[in-house]
Length: 172
Image: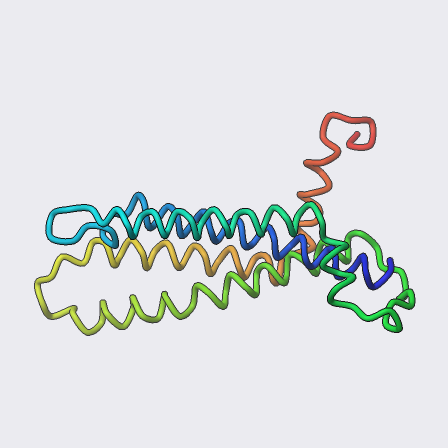
């Protein structure tokens, strides 16, 4: 695999993360409603701006998905394009899973700590803490998935290849 192809794989992984992040943010913005409702009325200008930013983000993710080698050629200089030693597809998939797991872990831990500190500081008060407990449980699930992707990526690779070859003669 050439360095351009390795960078293209990383660009595609980034495109998947960017699309997932844009959809997660859009669901929080449009379905959550708390960020768009002020004084009983909906902030339509804010929704329009958020929608445009979300669509542009999805457009960038689609561009990166369909043209990863273009980005790779812009990121990598021609002298660095000498072929690297060949790695197996399983190694690349495990490395990609570990990178996604690290990214998920890096984004989940700060939110989880913030929610845990809020729960700890307001434990003596009679506030409605149901939402914070739900978000804390959600973040715990995110951290467990991230740790599974990081440390159990070989198991994920086996599940991936099993699902890809299920029902074919290769899967038998």
